[in-house]
Image (cartoon, rainbow, N blue to C red; front, side):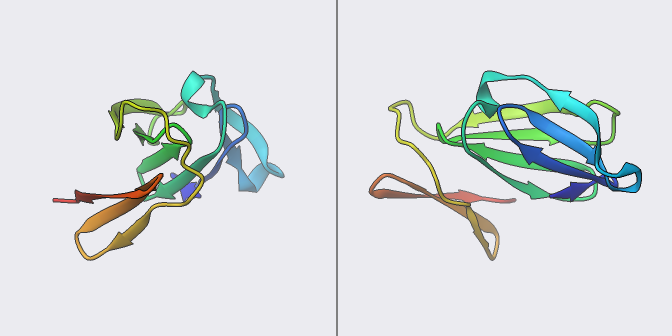
Length: 106
């Protein structure tokens, strides 16, 4: 995902890459939340990550090293999330096991 003119990806850490410097790593955040699968949604200055534990992480990408703004655990019981969330209208949808979680985006 692109945010603040960097590309971001998850592989045991959250990485920020500079596309103008042959994808040189310019930021890396080590956090247990990035230990497994994760999906990303980006705006110009924010990054929303959903990890495989069903936790949303909102990061500010304006600083050189992105900063955590908030975390939201969707469920206490461990249900592995391996799907990208869907956005429709003013809501975001996440499948947790046999359940579908809807969060308003207002």
